[in-house]
Length: 272
Figure 1 (cartoon, rainbow, N blue to C red):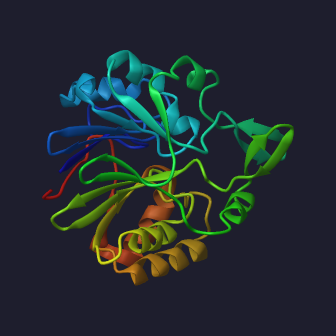
Figure 2 (figure 1 turned 180 degrees about the horizontal axis):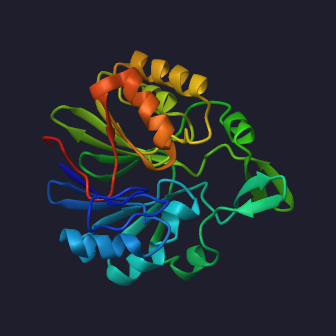
């Protein structure tokens, strides 16, 4: 199994970066694209890296925010066959509450209708192929995390705290154990590890890849988070994007070599 970062906030030389995330994953004879960043820039990087997006078998949207979804139309232009899997709770309705007013941070308006023939809404646990699954969150009271982060979804005329029912885990089974991808981990990376362990009893979890949404967190909060993650026993964390530079450095202090920096062009490999 091989995963290549097509876009992240930082990049290797000669590659583009932006506030967003996109990862291309090769697993046996299957190819999966997780997220599309916030523009078509991941397509440019894919060409530079020798990745043929036309060969992708499955597209997956980790959650319904613009910095992961706004390159979807560019993907559909590059690939005419792959279905794109969103969680059933996904819509064009995510907002960030700010003092100056509500800011739209959701999927580009109109995308879900324009590409409805390519989009699949996943409910419950979904098997994409042998060894590749999508799972919903099972952690309770996630709306409180949404409220604390001023993240809301619009339901009719009402704005309610986001419970991240539009977020999903992409899980691969390898010889070393389960590898989890969750691009922003809004439910909490420690919670995601625990809920995955509960969903796959007896299976070892060897790695979690994604942003951890710590860029607005205090040093005390990040250190407490690092302690909780350490207690899960997970072996490896690859993180970037919304973790933030300061958050990453604190995690590095607390977790050492267990943590590595995501960046555009990074290649990660596991025996599958």
